[in-house]
Length: 157
Image (cartoon, rainbow, N blue to C red; front, side, top):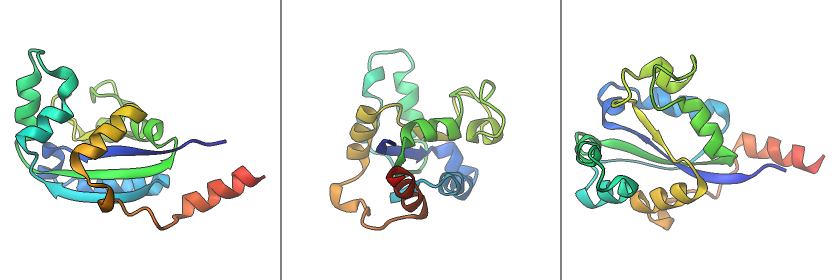
């Protein structure tokens, strides 16, 4: 059986500035994940601090806050079977130099500090991050995409 999940993905300010939003969305769509929410926004101080709450008090915390507020982000919620692990595989390692060729970060990111995309690392983080940026009524989950149809057929066999 496959595990259906939701995850939070954000194209970071450097990815938006470099015009990589479409490329990043395309990779998730091609994989078969279902986009259920998307918006472009300037991250507020409150959102930034909530997003990086686990790093509060660390020396790099102020830089994280400054970076996420340096320009607009494209915040998204994706749904799919094992989407958290799948998204992390698509994105590649945090440091682009360590990322496997073919991943978003290996192909598109320059350095660890500007790695173009963020993705939740576990179910709890995903739900927490989704709730920072989206209201429940903003999630459009009432349609079935092609991948869901295929997975349902496999589960029935």
